Image (cartoon, rainbow, N blue to C red; front, side, top):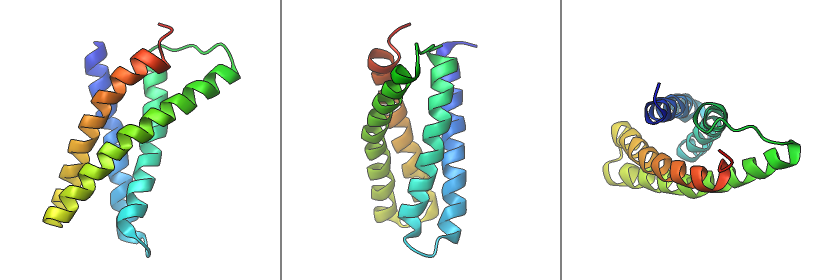
Length: 130
């Protein structure tokens, strides 16, 4: 399986996990369902994407716990930056059209932009030992 294909498949898997959890949380959260669902989805997406990127995209083998923590922090910082793109896009779509379809369309558009930028950041600055 080629690198680009794997990255796309893993981004889709992470996105599906993100959106699935968002859908569940959105319907059960008694307070701020939009924000709560977005935070929960983003959390699960982060964990899944980090593990897949580390082992299957960048074949990273960290030298130890300290190096791994540094990578997670840097990966997390880039995740925050690209998540802002994702959230802003999702919120804009929701505010403009106020429908579940628009919310998830915005999420998919934002995640696509974010994952694309994140790949290049991670390749250059997080998992650059390859």
